[in-house]
Length: 166
Image 1 (cartoon, rainbow, N blue to C red):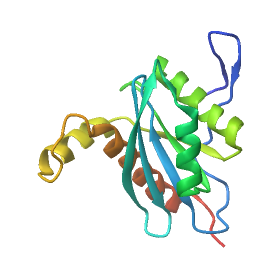
Image 2: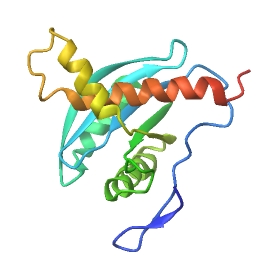
Image 3: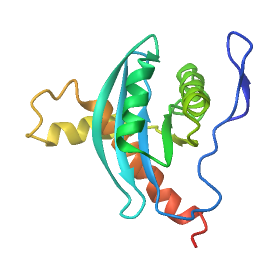
Image 4: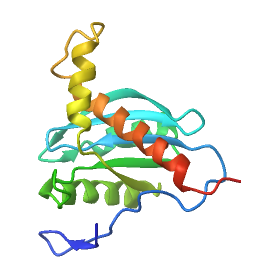
């Protein structure tokens, strides 16, 4: 994704996908950004695994920033990974621009490095996993946090093959 201007003429910085170098194991919060709900997951690079944490409500894509701050303080991640919703053909979607803006705002407000991860097909995979999981009673509401988990696990998987470790 290239740097883009939003509808107010504000420059949106393109998100890097991965850090250039890893000096220590990474703890990350992953976000599946949506206009009404934002799924959140936590994971770490040592095992490359992640767990669904919660779903945050959003109003027209705007989260409760105090809730985001609380999650960052509770989980103390080194980085944030935001799912990038490209269209199925790889082109940029309107939601992609908004997800990038969301990541840029997290970085600007909290000073934490943010990375983007292509999230195509994670919602479909999350729905399938949810159908197979009999332990979750509210299957319809729970897909966003599972999608965030999948985004983060996919990021860790690709991270392990792309970066230089000490």
